[in-house]
Length: 222
Image (cartoon, rainbow, N blue to C red; front, side):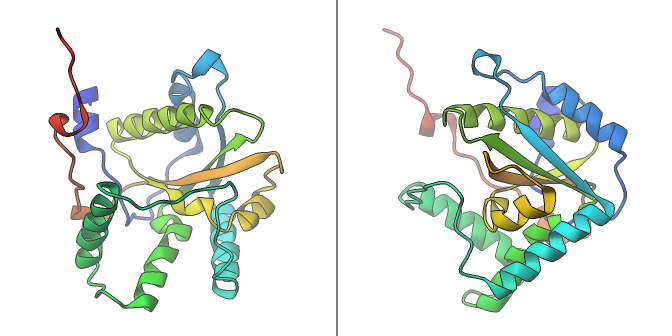
């Protein structure tokens, strides 16, 4: 698959089949994604890969903790978390489209809570990845991890695999750090599901909209 096809075909998958992905294949994807650029070549990414019993243990312990401590979901780092336009409308549009496909009615808090919890089961994907960064690095280095993750997702798509980048994993980070023995000097930034999409799941028909170039670009030619 060429780069254009990978970009056009990549999407966030939220229901996976149980078909396994080999460790060799994951290592190859990570090695090639590591060719991504980073400021002054600092290569700030750290990746924790969970499979099999380790994946099940992480999911079980986090979901158990979440049910007992629902209020303890704050991010590890300071966040303004301002929801302003036009970003708010885009976020709401995606949520409405997704929850319509999931047949979750507006205002059903329990159903919403349960669906959000699916993040912590990696949407049943056989492989989960947790991305962290050293707290001593400049926040601009977080951009580098985004580039690295994009490279990984495109490479996976080109090989017929599917992914979902998951900001939900920057919540309840205490459990993730404990289970995976992540050192204190690292922030848990996000997670990612990796596997093969369950094409029978209605939620996987969702393709999020994109703004036209004219909406986010200004050209200066004279």
